[in-house]
Image 1: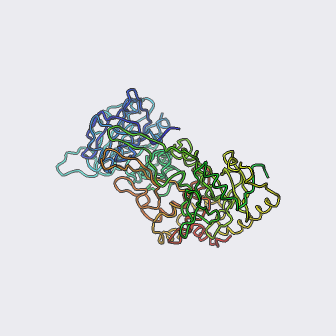
Image 2: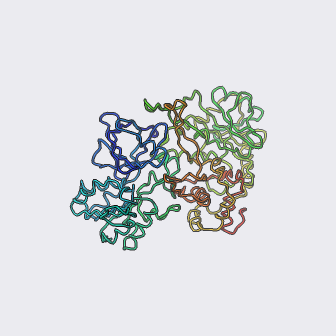
Image 3: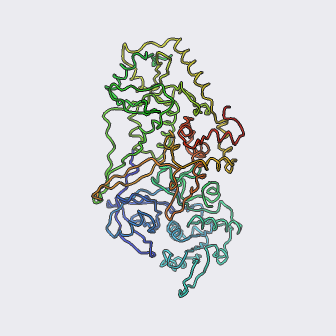
Length: 276
Length: 348
């Protein structure tokens, strides 16, 4: 029997600053030749001996199985410790765990991505996956909102994303500083529904962000004529084990770590104790 | 009765225990102040096999309150060492409710991602169950069709039933039959013994008076009454101490934490029982807490056991042991809440 609690040793090979409190760590499993595969939307338990473990979504290109990225915001005890980690430092990894974005279900359809703040990180692998396999998907509309422009992740990639065939990137921020030169939109992410002129016809929507944002984002879609089964979202819950044992992430008869984190909206709505 | 059944006179129990202690670690309920406690027997120590319930169920031998998963050195990484057992452990005097809970644990800690630490202990454990002839007002095992004061073929290695001056012992596995192979110690089971067993169990069944009716319809029933006033009323009494979950034989949740040594470069990753009744159980980074209200936490415990568990694990999540009500300092009793919703007496 495998010891599922034992992390694999991994090495940080690159650190990239995203915002004032968020960095992307590129990681390679320690043993040479150790491949790492995952599906877009899945997460790892990131382990720092002495600090514990935390579930962190994988933010990199799923076509790359040599290295993978974790985009980490420094908000908890483990993630705050991560802030000082540099190239060459060793961490532990268990994963990849959980369900994935509807990579196959979305084939032949238009895809709308709705992301808020750090919520772009778990969706980025799906965006990159679609770009690799661009012909399999219809129109792609990426709607990304953050509190301020300084909170936005992957800003250096938006231009490249927007240049992909039949792909739009729409940005909005809640607040614009008085002296700031912001040429995009202002307001919560749902203002982009009007600007992007979203259409429910033959479309799949994926949403990730704070739960309260996902509430308004999905309810806004329903008002636009979308149906629950077209909408997928990724739930954040406390997790200690990642393998459906510790009980913290349970919702109804589900472990979010095993049956989620990606759920269909109509199924997630059935749960109590959500903000949806 | 099958040949794997024998009679042990109570006057010979001590001798039998001494033989067991030569080969096994034996844990059994012993009197502990006003309560009973599963304890590892030292030579000469007397177990108490006639008891209502122990505060902590025997789950602690399979999923200890605190358990080291592995030790680490910050420089050299991590190393797991499973505990080495010289002898198998006999857990003696397990009530049917607790034995059923272990079967439920086998599902929770099994499945497609089995828990190596649980199974390491489980495979080293022999369950000697005892039919329960002393149910009290908090017991409600008769609510469940496959429950009640004894076990039927499953869930034990050896099953004892108290017949006054003697126990009838029935093996449920090869491991269990090994415990009753001492020539001269046991007597043959007679028809009178079988009849006595039947009578003892009938009486015990009648003594289990508390009940949750219509278990099969419970998930739908509870869903319909999610907003019922009884939950807010009970939540007002609840102090979120977590006693109901710590004492529950099917509660399995745990917290994981790194305990550093003083040199800060070495330490151990441990898991410790956790409780969904505690405030921060469902809290995530940035302070979002999905069960901030006591009512949400109280409902979660009851709904998880009775409404969600069958769908989640294919078993019941409750065996009617009565601990959650018995040890609740605020007198919260889910059988009574359920009766209140139905507008009925709990004594069905």
